[in-house]
Length: 341
Image (cartoon, rainbow, N blue to C red):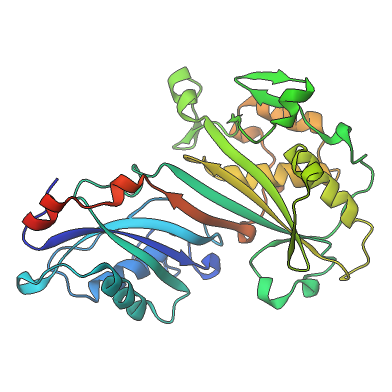
C-alpha cells in the first residue's frame, strides 16, 4: 500500500514505567488516570500533523505493568506538503514533547502503508522479576521499588527435588516421563485461561483453539549481587524446579542479608489475559506451599479461567514487556514506495 501527499506510516518502539498509568491503552476523556497511549498521541499532535492522530498499539499491558520494548504504528502527514520526518528526528521530537513523563521512544522505522504493529508481530517477550528473601518492603532496594515482586514468607515444607517438578501438559495430555518433564513450560500449549468474551466462557472448539498459546520459551535467571547464575546443571533442570528450589533456599536466609533477584522470561507469538502473571503466581504458590503440584495439573486440565484462584495472580509491578519482534523485511520501506510517497 502506497501512501501519497507526504503522509508516512511509522513504527515506534517505546518504554515506560507503568506505575502511574491505567495501562498502555488510551483511557476515555472522563477518566482521571490516563493510559500511555494518551500521552503518545498528545506528543504526536504536538508535531502539528494534518491528519487525525491515532496509534495502534501492538501489545496491551495492564495498570502497573512496565515495558522496555512495546511498539505501535501511526500515520503522520506534515503541513504544506513538507517531506516526512527522518526517523531519528521523529524520535528526538517525540521524546521532547513526552517530558517529564516516564515514557521514552527508543526507535522509529518508516514502514509501508499496509504495515500493522499488532498483526505483523512475530513474537513478544515478557520478563517477570522476583525479589526472594524480602521480609519487609523496606528491604527492597530503592532502585527496585515497584519494579519487582518481593517475596516474604517462604515455606520449607516441600522437598526441593524431583517431587516439585510437575508433569508437562503437551497436546492436551499429561506426560509423566522424565524427557517430557524436562521440557515443561519451555514449549507447551498453555490451556489456562480459556477465552473470556463479554464475561462469559467460550467452550466451543473453534473458540477454544484460539485461546491456546504456544510458549516458545520460559527461562529462569537468577541474579545475585549483580551476577547471573547460569551453571549448566541448573539450566538443564525443569523451569518449575528452578523457581521452587530458589524459594526454598531463600527461606533460610537472614532478613535483608541476601536478596536474590530472579527474572522469569516468557516468549510467545501472543499471550492471553494475565497469562504470565497467573503462570508466575502458580509457580510461587507451589514454592510457598499454598498450592500443590497436583493442583497446578488440575488447573491445566480444567481449561477454565474462572477456576484459577484470583488471589494467586502475581502483582503487576514485577512484569515487563521487554521485546516485540518483527520480520526484518516488514521494517523496510521499498524504494518504489519511498519515491512515490
